[in-house]
Amino acid sequence: MYNLDNEIDRKDTNSIKFDKLKVLFGREDILPMWVADMDFQSPPAIIEAIKERAEHGVLGYSFRDDESVDSFIKWVEKRYDWHIDARHITSSPGIVTALALAVRIFTKNNDKILIQTPVYPPFFSVIKDNHRELVTSTLIKGKSSEGDDEYQVNWQEFEEKLSSGVKMFILCNSHNPVGKLWNKEELQRMGNLCLKHDVLIFSDEIHADLALNGNRHTVMASVSPEISANTITAMAPSKTFNIAGLLNSLIIAESPSLLERFQKEIESLHLGMGNLFGHITMGPAYNHGEEWLKEVTDYIAANAEFANKYLKTNASQITFVKPKSSFLLWLDFRKTGLTHKQIKDKLINEAHVGLNDGLTFGKCGEGFFRMNIGTTKTRVEEALQRIAKVF
Image (cartoon, rainbow, N blue to C red; front, side, top):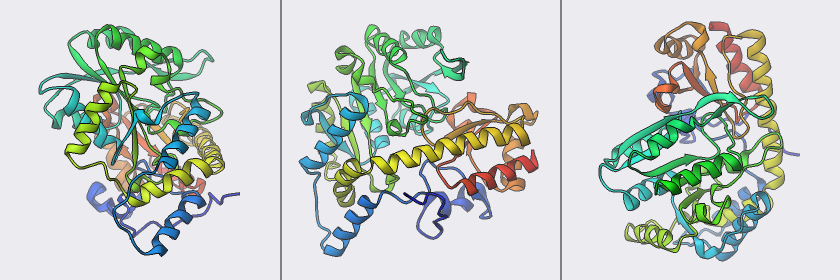
């Protein structure tokens, strides 16, 4: 129904992905396969809502209405069997903003905060920029119950780190960049360990809606009432419906004290008003975007399968663990025998492909680069051809 093969020209649209190539890669003749936004047009209902309001012509101060919040509540109840109350929901201009606020509210200077690497680069900067101590636990490769390769928690190290005086654990669920969908048992074990060691959980679930191949996302706060009371959950329609530029996130805390402290900080910084177009698109997105999302996730899953087969045939030394969620591939170049610097140089100056540097996801990202396949199959194929040609 939706033409996802349509190549949309995003150049000269103030797109970070397409118009900042010279800044990041030192040259402009780069095929951009970085930055976690997709190249697909958003669902028609969202575009129509924006057009209608723009044509109205008065773009004054606005607020998120009850109907929009209700659409989100129904969405997560249907998809994740997670029952929440509107009274438990507040907002933030973005999830990274919410994370920075949570760090400032619930921890103090020099407090320890734990993350699981490799992970989304702002997790590092939010901790360091706010003068907290970064503590890392590295994910390890293992086998799923179905026998597939997957990333797993190093449980011994994870608990050792938690017990070292950590005050907050930042969970990436589902995990960026490895595409890991945490199952209920894994979440329960992590959540219970945080309770045991009195560690607050901030769960970034911005990629929740992008589960692939019939897999199902599990919300950390849905696992048990005790874990829910110790968790701040961050969600948004931004990755789901490709509207990241509208800066509109939902922060959920079923603990009244956690919610109240977070809301007070939002109000003190005057961050609560939000974006007009973010507000008016939330309802249409959650009420009418499900069919579009199904087609998009099917398309991304097909891109991932194509990439897997293509690399096995044409560049078998480059591998990745098949993602169970989102539109990101965590490409492993270590078998090429080249240094990280050499790999990066070849990607930029020979293949002319722009990928996210794995080292920005942690030291364990050496030899890895992140590729965004939330784009047309034609563009994915071109990027893989360029990479295979020079490796």
